[in-house]
Image (cartoon, rainbow, N blue to C red; front, side):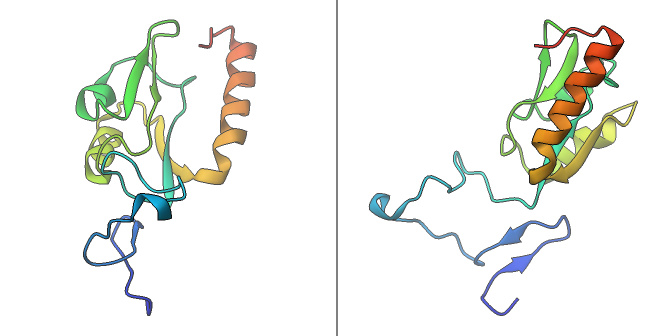
Length: 125
């Protein structure tokens, strides 16, 4: 990339090779928080397929959480853990219900998931 940015093997675009800090007056609110990084993909748990093993939550506890009402895990933060840690959690899932998806698909995926859960009689939190 000609603007000084680069893309790593997982598709994350890094703006600069060294971190930049912004003066608070220049911040837009879209900056990553808590040391997170901007990502091209979001992590998604297909909760209706989740068996509640909690492997993902044990590996990437800042990203995944067991929802007590459903007994299934959910991605609660997109920047909670490193990409490598999230990928490790994805790899531990015995039913392959965790995926990288485009951010713009999250709303549609959630709606479809709610409809599927209702049709199967699965409670949703």
